[in-house]
Structures are given as C-alpha cells and as structure tokens.
Image (cartoon, rainbow, N blue to C red):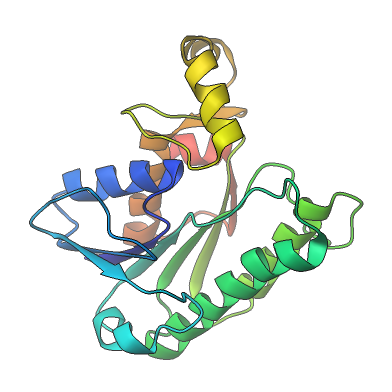
Length: 219
C-alpha cells in the first residue's frame, strides 16, 4: 500500500515513518511537511508544502495513497483556545476534507491523546478541542481511527520537536524505559508500537473508532 504521513518530523511521526520504511507491505511513503526530512530511503518522498491548509499543488500525488497517518500537532502550552483550535481542529480538518474528496473511504489515523474529551465541552481546553477534532473526523467519508496514547516512549532515537518535552525525554529516558516495563499496557506505549499499530489499522481496519494505549499495544 501507499501511505502519506503528515508530521513525520515529530517524535511520533519519526517512529511511524521508521516502521513504514521497514514494512515490506508499504510500497511508497509520502511525507508532507513544511521542511524536508533528513531521512533518505528509496521508497520515501518528502514533499514540502509551505501552507498545509492548501494541498492543491500535491493533490495528484495524494490520489493514489491508501492511508494517511496524522501525528501532526502542537502543544497547547502558551496558546489560547482560538490559536490552538486553528492549529489543531482547522488544520487537521482541512487536510482530512481534501483527502475525503480525493479518496473517499481512505484509512485516516489521527493521533489524539489520553484524556481527550469526546463531548467537546469539558473544562480542559486542549481536551475539548481534540474531542471536537475527533468528532469531525469521524463524521467524514473516511475510514477514520483515533489513537489516544498515554505515555509514549521513544525507542529508536526519535526526538520531540517541543523543547520542554525534549528536555523531559532527555533527562528521564532511562526512567521512562523502566516505567514501560512496570506500567500496565493500558497506560504506556512506544513509538514503535504506534507505527506498527497504524500500519495494521490501515491494512485490516480497526476494532473500534477510538483506540487507547491498551488497544494500540494489542494491535
């Protein structure tokens, strides 16, 4: 199958990209972002799009993609709800609506997070915005699946683009790996498991539309 990844330069995106490149069943990978990737591989094509809300220039390249993996996102820290909504809900739905028009029924996997508020009305800002985003994606003519991981442990040198997260992962790396061993599978997963689970969902479908860490690990 052919896949497209939005956000392949982030920590989770790096893990997804690695697993796609290693999987013999993935024939071609398009990585769409604002800057080129440092990774080189015969089946990888990195496409630079300055404004991801306008994919007109690459629509022909997207038409033969079978699945979209969407780990693209920003931290809510320091952002008001209007700005966070623009970078989370508006951007994600702009991409998804384009793909729904080009390839109705395409597998679309969105990385949300544990604690996302499906009502879209809760007190926690990021959770309700993510919840509204999930609901809107599930209403589109796509085979959409929401991934809600809790703690994600990088396994193969993946690095977060968020400075505060990067510092935490750098200082707490050994502890995180220890926690991965002792925490129940319902609370933690890895970048490797995220990538493999997304490929499995794209290939065979998901058992339900919203997947928590335990579901991801089982896949």
